[in-house]
Amino acid sequence: MTDRRLRLAVGVLSAAGAAVAGYLVYARYTDTTLACATGGCETVQRSDYALIAGIPVAVLGLGAYLVLLATAFSTSEIARVVGAVVAGSGTLFAAYLLYAQIVVIDAVCQWCVASDVLIFLLAVTCVLRLRSG
Amino acid sequence: MSRRTYAAVGTIALIVAVALIAASLIGARGGGPAAQAEQLSVNDASTLLRGIPQSGPSLGRPTAPVTLVEFADPQCPYCAQWSQQAFPELVRDYVRPGKVRVVFAGLAFIGPDSDEALRFAFAAGRQGKLWEVVDLLYANQGAENSDWVSEDFLREVGDAVPGLDVERALRETSSPEVESELAAAKDLQARLGVDSTPAFAAARKGGKLSPVQITSLDAGGIRPSLDGLLAR
Image (cartoon, rainbow over all chains, first blue to last red; front, top):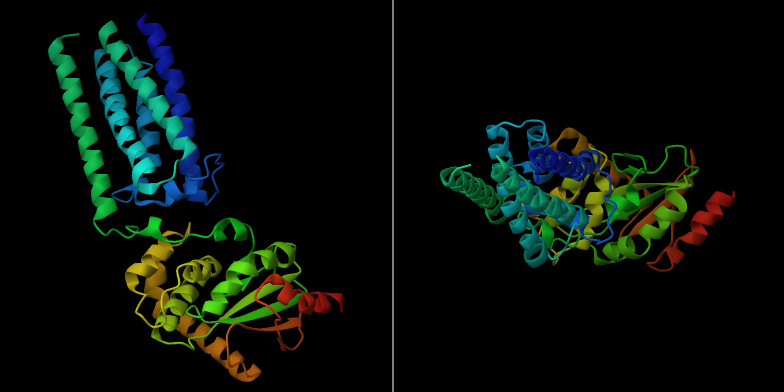
């Protein structure tokens, strides 16, 4: 696959991820109840796992997706490396959070799962970008 | 791209992920403010009360034609029962449509835990969150005077209330405003001769409060009195 197509994929996936994370950030700071088909969104968002050192995980996620979105606009090697590091670490952390939801919190947030899928696809795409360079 | 670059990317991603997971685990297990929040029994008060005006101990539109005062002790099991069985229906049918305004008159009849809980509830009331806190206190009520209302417990309760500045609420538990709310509830209790909880008094807007007898701890126990006042 060409780098152009991969950049397009990174752009679309990271924009979708930013929308999901942005919604969670918005809900958190405006006390809006999350639309939630799985029923566990509020429980997950109120749990300890929704914060890292006082910073909402959704804010960190939003930041990560915006960085990934920015890498989609560059063909440089540094952009490909940064993209792979951010998406790779994001995927590992997302796997840990998914484990926490299922095993520890005993509630699943559909928005977090959607973000997990997006960050995983981004990791694959970003690694492919590394290879294409 | 070289094999070394791949190795470097993988290593850095792993280090970042491990650091994030470690920070998360420290927050979750280190007795942080919300360490046990997920173990709290959380009613859906935030959803029930969303959009309804709150000012101090008052819930509902200031223009509501009827005011209902609830005398309650956070340690009283019947108050908890009333809160769980009658309150949601009362909110849905009377408070949200603007017919009734409910005022919480917290009394520390049972002991020191009641006082601690009430102070926190009234302090949360300064941020428009008294009713969410009261609901959580009832939902997680401990054995009478067993020191269940610790500061850690109040932090957990506060953390489960979206939008509440917990540290500010804890700081304000001894503020003159909270003392004044406690005193006002006590004065009203003495004036109306309330000697048990839950107890209720109601009036048409601008009228004189009169005791309301409830016939049961569900909403049906108070509906006839409210409907009667609204019909006047």
